[in-house]
Image (cartoon, rainbow, N blue to C red; front, side, top):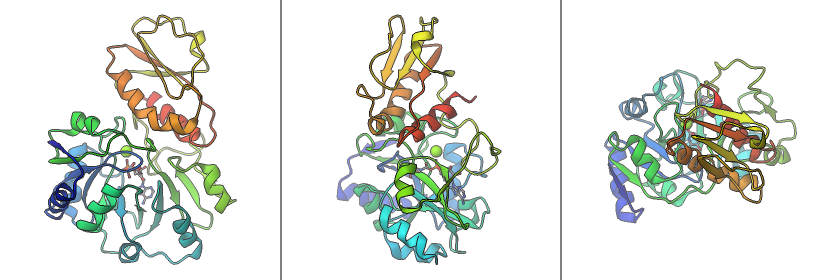
Length: 319
Ligand code: TXA
Ligand code: MG
């Protein structure tokens, strides 16, 4: 695979690859996606093959124009259009009823689909110049950490895809928030790039899927997601950890005594959860490559994007 600058010419070339039923990795504001034509079942099958992903985990379809939403999904509720108006383009994925034009392989046979309009110029141009509906999971092998740089994608899937469009380090750094709007009350299925508090401003009664009390069979709640290769343990403070040689520390902010650790990553020296989200996957990728035996991760407050960060840290700790 090759990393291509996101010039108009290269985005056109990538769009032809997608229209040809093959795969392109592209940047979004959250993480890099592994994209294929959402309207072409064979292209979508190639995504599952490249990721070695169980086909029961459904994909997000990315769009660039609202007209496309009406072609692929059956959205009627004015509340859903209010949500779209407020958050698109952006890091909010909506679960809505699908139309027949979306092949079953995209949704793993569900009659609902996941759709979002990413807030990234390269992604939007690629979608517009190709099929207008691009299915894309995060561009990592199934169960591994999501990529937030083109180099991550190259390292993880380089031999399986033809092109990755360069977009630098992803601005948000954690995946989109998944909001199910098919029921009476909207429910956050996956915390992500748009904070729960921000959604509450528009939908005060929004529910949240609870990972402690609900079975992990619901889509998006499979265990062993986002895991580094090294075991990761969650601690209240690394100050209490005595095993430090050949160990890595993942800290929210400056302060704790990290002497003796073989590798240290600080998500945000000042303790800003937005910055922590943007650096999380880079930090985990770095620790996973530091030649250590295990990682100790400190808890971070579950407020704002801190909720998405802790969700990913919990998932990274599950083996
Ligand atoms: O930020 C993102 O969302 C990135 C970028 C590339 O857009 N994409 C991403 O895709 O994270 P993926 O495939 O790694 O995660 C899609 C999530 C999964 O948790 C999946 O279970 C959920 O969306 N999902 C997809 N379709 C669904 C459906 N019909 N009902 C419930 N959940 C669904
Ligand atoms: Mg993923």
